[in-house]
Image 1: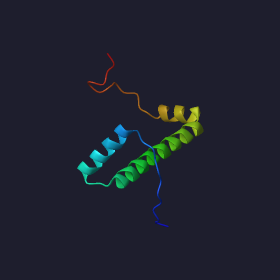
Image 2: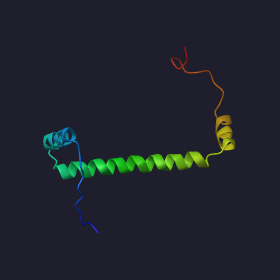
Image 3: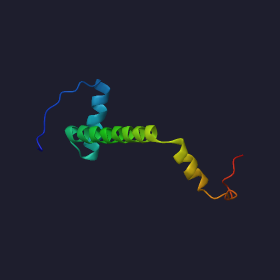
Length: 82
């Protein structure tokens, strides 16, 4: 369902003021701003969880096989460690 629910969140006064000012400047309501911020944070956390699962499932043999497939070549100009 596309029902909106109310959630009461306690914020430090300074954070609340900054959110209100930024939301107003960008043409958002505080609710829209907070919903967008929460959605972005969820996306980041989901991506981190996914990458952790992928890393945990990784195998050294796969890494060695992929590394062996890279041709031996001199570094391109400017891509040399000092």
